Length: 403
Picture (cartoon, rainbow, N blue to C red):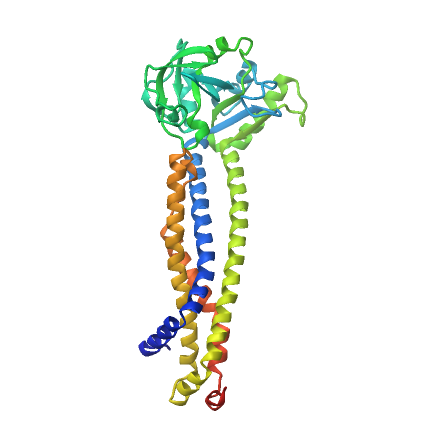
């Protein structure tokens, strides 16, 4: 085993070969920084999806018409009051509500913006808030009869987000040419699109858009969370009957929020695995560089090895010296890698949060920090095993004659 004197000897050699040690550390450092960055951001996304799953998705079903455009942009396909009635009659469904959405023009002073206008029935506001994971931050909720009144997303109350000046309660804002009074703001969701939404009642929307009555962009239903697959089948069957459609020719789509979030998680899995694969290739190249450095170090110190073995050094001690050196270089690279990776991700996360993309912020864990350091140290140590083993087998007589 390596002892205190041999450690001092190894560290002295590492310091003596500054340039070579730096290049070895740098090669592992790059891989560790890459892994740290993508794992921390990936974990942040996974945690965000899990938060959504636990807060909004367990007992919700979403029904949307099949179309070629995004909700609010394509008004060709819609759902009706009859569809809501069919859904509410389905066993296992507790309540259902229809929502409208449109791309709308908002104006304040000389500034125009295009955002999403979202509506809901005030009697079902609790269901909508759970789905969108939002709540009133200031002001009050919409009520029946609130014509000419609007609720705004979080970004409207922040300077230079939507408009140059922040809006406040009781301010007026022009929406689709109509002057509306601001009665409240929702709290921050964490992404610019949701935080720039504007909200009005279903009834007022139907007045703003004549001919839109009963043509919903989506229906949200609260169901028995214990039997979601069976309830989805029942809803699909009831909607096919009410809309006169054959199985396989549905013009609607039914899914639980949990299923939608699982699809997102699955996509994230593939992205993270692909990025980690690239990072591991970088680490593999680093390991080859470390092995090459160790081999060169062995060749340069053959006479030293001969002298150590001649005065009684064991094969295991010689082996331990070179494994320790390569492992120590990996350890230093790991420590520097997580420091640099943390600084990059922290600064990027702060920028994203300030830009309204807070849900993309990285998440950290003790396992991430320790795992990166351990992985770097093991990468260095393992890459030095073969050169170290060969050095331990050198015969003293041959080593002392080596030129």
